[in-house]
Amino acid sequence: MKNTIAERISDFIKNFPPFDQLSKGDLYAITKEVTITYLEKDKNVYVEGEVPHDRFYMIHKGAIALKKVINSKQETIDRLDEGDIFGLRPLFAKENYATDAVTEEESILYSIPLATFKPLISQNKDIVDFLIESFASNTENPFSKELHGTLIDHRLDLVANDKELFELQPVRYTKKVITAKGETKIKDIGQLMKRHRIGSIIIENDHVPVGIVTDADLRNKVITGEHTIEDSASQIMSTPVLCYPKSVSISQAQLTMMKHHVSHLCVTEDGTPNSKIIGVISQQDITVMRGSNPTVLMKAIKRSKSTKELKHIRKRIMVLLEGFMEQNIPLTQTSKIIFELNDATVKRIIERCIQKMDRQPPVSFAWMSFGSQGRKEQLLHTDQDNGIVFESVKENELEAVRDYFMLLAKKINKRLNAIGFDFCPADIMAKNPKWCLGLDEWKQQFNQWTSNTGNDEILLSSIFFDFDITYGDANLTNHLSEHIFEITKNNHLFLSKLAASALRSASPLGFFRQFLVEQDGAYKDFFDIKKRAIMPISDAGRLFALSNHIKNINNTAERFERMAELFPEDKEFYLSCSYTSKALLKFRTKQGLLHNDDGRFIELSALTKEEKMKLKRCFKTIAKVQELIKLKYNVNNFM
Image 1 (cartoon, rainbow, N blue to C red):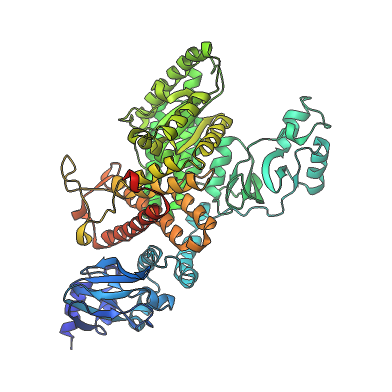
Image 2: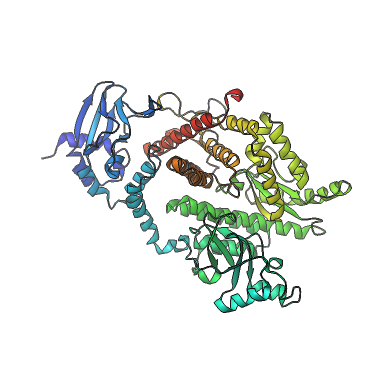
């Protein structure tokens, strides 16, 4: 005989995650064991520090506040309403409750036994994914060691066992690295290569890579007579060294080698040239997979002979991105691969445009990408943000040199627009003479932004302080980066104003758990995920990077991961910020692919309960990081 109460419970909970992923039979098996609890307003479900119950809870009617004592004062850290579940995480992590759960109004709760729930979901990948994201975004304790060793590893095993995703697995790099000093003679470098039967030597200083000498360097620079074997390694080494962390994927390593025409990569502790060498990757270390989509696309980009071809390739890149999203490939891997393909596309356009000029560039230059592309976060078709920095020249030569690069920039911007990168509405493009400057001019521009800190200067700082070189002389962008860190070091006034600017968009949730939406215009009642969620977290990442002198890292998630290393006492908080950055970018990307736009404006009524829950978790982190900014920086005078 059927249990009619269980059937009614089943009819309710099947509409909410993670129960919407269960079969009818499994759902009924759970609901038969559910008990119903009625609580009046201001009653505790459980209290902070209490040993966890043997069950977790779902709100059928009413609302629950999660409260925690912070600085001797009890504060509400989250509010939950109908369909939300709570009290589950401590059961998996085997931890006491970290908050009080208090009814904010009369409430009816469904109490669900873990003993019944857990066996039914252990083999359900979608529910495992939901729980991982739920726990990882719980800013009270987002990266529990217990959970990291169980649920998260289980998800990674699912990826690792899929042969189709082999190319996304980390490269097996050579850990025994043979190094030498810059003053080592070339003949000794050659003898080292012969003795160890290797094709490269990393040149280091205090265990940090400063260059690399390969067998190709010996062929091209020594055997040709350009240098003698008595010269030092520093005279023929390639610098700077292309560095990656040990987690670099096979596909990304392949793309980087093809893009930069190199055969070796260096592996360092944090993936930058500023940390200790831990390994080296050569082409021989990589098994090239037949039919590797990213590799095929990269080859097509490098072979392309027309803008029309590149436009077609860009469409294929979007298909690849959609496939990655559908397969739930980790966003870190996805964004890196798409960045390399986008970057190579822009580089190919620049190469072809230079060929169409009547002469080669008069001085060295670099093409810089700003904003989301500079942060390696541009996945969808968005507008251009770019500029040119060229070698400083004498005043009487300046305008002639600028005219050359202005003409080149117009050709490049036009072709980028043709393949899908829209013109920037604010005209932040290299074809604008304001953003086609010599190195000294760029330094003066940054000086002005950091000393004359009005609202316009702070706004421009949020765009231009995140830049990445796409093509040209890296020494120019390195000099510019060093200059930026020099002028912002101990510049408390600028950092305080930058901090105040990072708070210009309040927490995306309004009164009692409601999303803040646009009040008028073409997108009235839509949620602006860029303005209200992505910008606040990326602004915070930029602020922390500048104030803590974090070099060579522009990506928002990676900036927070670096903060977690610098401040281990707050590691879990910064990792939750990193997770939030990636989760928001993934959400925008999925929405953009779904609606064939840039994913910025979201119709809330079209979102599922699960999607709204995920966004709300991210918003909690944004609110917390904004509170931290208020505490760490003197912003009261600039709000």
